[in-house]
Length: 199
Image 1 (tube, rainbow, N blue to C red):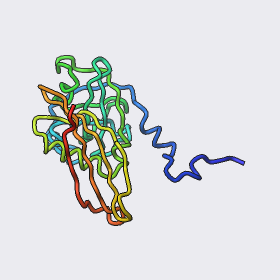
Image 2 (cartoon, rainbow, N blue to C red; image 1 turned 60 degrees about the horizontal axis):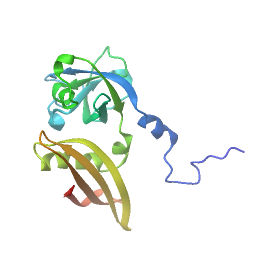
Image 3 (spheres, rainbow, N blue to C red; image 1 turned 180 degrees about the vertical axis):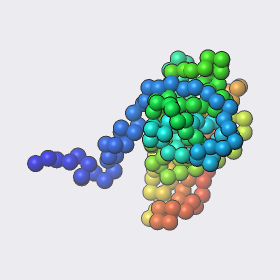
Image 4 (cartoon, one colour; image 1 turned 90 degrees about the vertical axis):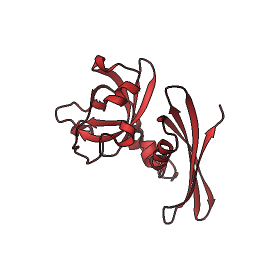
């Protein structure tokens, strides 16, 4: 009899999440963006950390992608705001600011990148919500990476999720811990907290 390893442990991640988390080897170009996008999300959203993708790539409007430049290991988190009709699924079109944030001069035009669909961020309820608060709370910095630190049940109607965000400015890199307490029965936020981690 076939033993389904996911049957007994409700916390086990189903295998298709692993597939979504695989790093996609691809290429990135850049654009200044336009007035109208297929997603009705402005290119200026997320402090211009935005991207257009192939309609065949399977990414959703508003989805967060982690894009890494393997040449220098620089990373950015970008939001899907538009599509590019004739691009292959592993080619993306970054906003110029996001392209340059990968440590590349725009004159280069095309670079090899590693794209992670970041499902762990999408799956955790408030990871994306906190990213936006971190962006607002730390002007002049941009979120370049994150880690889900964990979730704990505080009481029967309170759960705390905690994330560590890595922020970069032209002068320095800092880490910020973000946590949110919410009611799992209503999904309403009870409180949230951001604090800079001493390096």
